[in-house]
Figure (tube, rainbow, N blue to C red):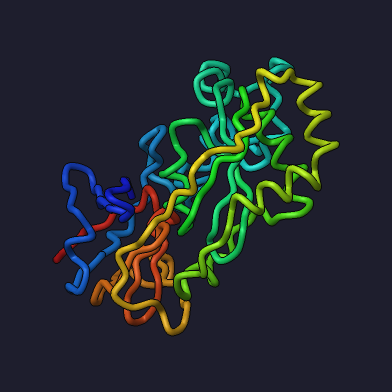
Length: 265
């Protein structure tokens, strides 16, 4: 779901082929998704019985750079070895500035994202606060930094806890300072390895706060799936991260990328 931040509020848009609607405006209304039984790979446009790596068919998931293991483990980036699946894609998406950040989902978390994707990344993971702490020149470097910091701070989102409510605000600046001190030796080594112009410590960035359109948080976090039922409908109680809240459970919209559905209000 495309998202933007307006005056601290996450604003969601649902896009289905040639149709799109502002989801925030549907809060409190009944909506209905009907899976028609087709999954279309966004790369080759062929039908597939199962989707992989965010909606692709299996053959495409094995040849596209955006589906390679280095996307989830950026410290394993092999672009410099000349073995990137799609060098042009790697040049455009990985060999560009990235941020290492701290966010507050249900607890403090470390993550990485491209320079222009900070807000989108935080909203996608359901963070209520975000703070960039380093700016580096490539995805590989960001992965190396993240790996160091993840020894002390989780790099995973506890999605069930994230969906249960709004967490207490955290002093992310304090966490940043503590991590810089605790990981100082390892981070200094990375700065020496890649050059101080390629590993920039950010000590004065503001904390971004994010609010989500929620009428009621789930009493029980139960996952809804088009793999189990073709129709998911009910009152839209909230949106957080990439999840829609219904009385009977939560629907992860991103998980069903490439599923062909009909949408009714």
